[in-house]
Image (cartoon, rainbow, N blue to C red):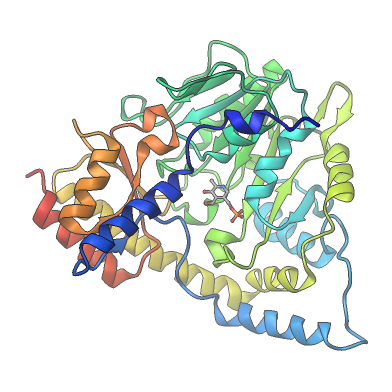
Length: 406
Ligand code: PLP
């Protein structure tokens, strides 16, 4: 019997468990400290009323023999796929049809599973820093080569540094990748690529036969007209891109679980349709997102739902603005935060983890060390707008009082 030894190549403990342990240890030793958590990527507001109503109604249907639903269609209910195609794509002028949308239980699974469609020889490129799922899922599949613990990099991964020096816009790589992961707005930096900057990647992918794996989990936070809401707004994207979307950050579904992936039928590699491959994968390994969740998803697209989720997004963005402006006043170099719920700050000479400790000790505020997202995240730190407004204001006041640089 042999296990998959690629799992053992995964380095260290998971970032958020290390943070949780440090915070628990600190709280035990400092019982008086009221700790404010601005490190989380999880939402805190409850599900909006019209969506809760849809959940209740769907639960009632499940208890009624005449309205009961068993296995959902593998690729999702038509009512939800059509609402998505119309609202998220056709309204923006993207020619995406309902049958190019695959409903799932969230973007994390899809981002992690998509690599199955590609050869083990495929070279991946990722932004650095980056959402860890892209790299780790390829490590598990044995595609990333050897890990260099000193550098924090994998020998077969092509890294695309995103730092303040390049304005968080990755340069095209010297080696040509097969798969390019792009997250826009990006987690953790909170920064974005404009339509023009993204077009460079679409053209590059088409020219080199690469596939763009485009994660738009934070699309709902985009305010800037120059930043596209979908990669399919760009000419040429239908032939080279797959888009991942989530209901987690726009509608608070982190605990409900719902997402979708868009694979255009024009996306062909080696003469094979990736749409057909993913449909086959879904049919074999996935039994469909639950009816109850999909009905709740439909409510997100209702008139009431759209209004309610916008109010929640505004709430989180007010928090994000409070952090961004407060840190700037305190003398920090801050990035992101305009089209995303994440503020990315530079920690100066201090390492990301040293800043974590200092912030916890002096301000009793928890954030996320940038180095946990990749080597280029060292000397950066992530704070999020997902807390309560009152806590956010207080956290910023504490930072200004105890950790101001000027
Ligand atoms: N993609 C990015 C970039 C994320 O930051 C997250 C969650 O934090 C996800 C995907 C996961 O989304 P979901 O909750 O739909 O699995």
